[in-house]
Amino acid sequence: MTSGTNDATARAARRAGALKSNLRVEVDRRGSVPLTIVAPAADDPPRGGVVVVQDARGITPYLVSVCDRLADAGWLAVTPHLYHRDGFDEVDPEGSWPSASTTMLTLTGTGIDADVDGALGHLADAGFGPAQQAIVGFCMGGTVALHTATRHPLAAAVSFYGGGVSEPYWSGVPPLVEAAPGLLGPWLGLYGEQDALITTEEIAALRAAVARSGRRAELVSYPDAGHAFHSEDRAATYRPVAAADAWTRALAFLDEHVRPR
Image (cartoon, rainbow, N blue to C red; front, side):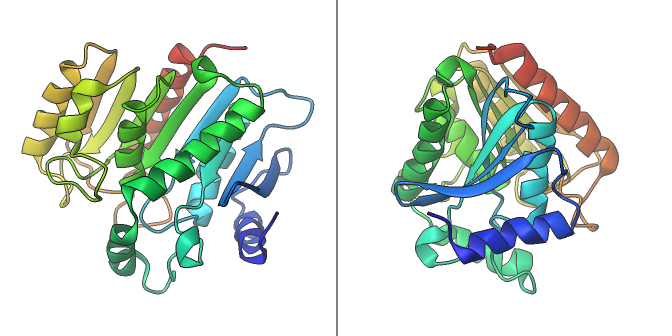
């Protein structure tokens, strides 16, 4: 089942140049959760599956462009629409970040887990088992990525500036410093030391917490970057040098840990 609003998101992303013509995009449902799915060309079978978790703004053209870049690198990218219970995909672009930071707090751990599990289920239906499954998240999605990696033995998890480090965002999702020692697989964190939402002390505490997991885990921090430094649609926060390095690291991490079928 496809909703008109979700189709509009995909069309807007195409108009913005977010989707390349050689990729396949669709919006589908698994159970109640809508999923935006971006796949390599039909003659280029995916090497594995990646769940992509939104930042606080929702399913934006930027997020779809991230899925596009993953698909262009050979991955099947699936992103769950976490705001579907509220009846929309993206917060009002006019309000953007101020409204997004409030809207994200209406989510619940139970709902987030169900929606992410729906996306993982789609990857399983596509033939990708845990050894071929990964998760990448941005902002609140980075929080979800680490949290999910404590619930499922994924091949890899990547968190771009995931918050809720010392205080939780949602019931049912513990602070990352408490969750991190329970990682079930490899994790990469990518943070900015100028982040107004995540202190350098929290970054240090999270680095120490993931080290206690005994898993392959690394936290890279960028001295001249702040929150949302990868969001190229936000001129005030985008830091191209840090963004390029972080994206290269993320792709290399996936290449290293996600096994081909």
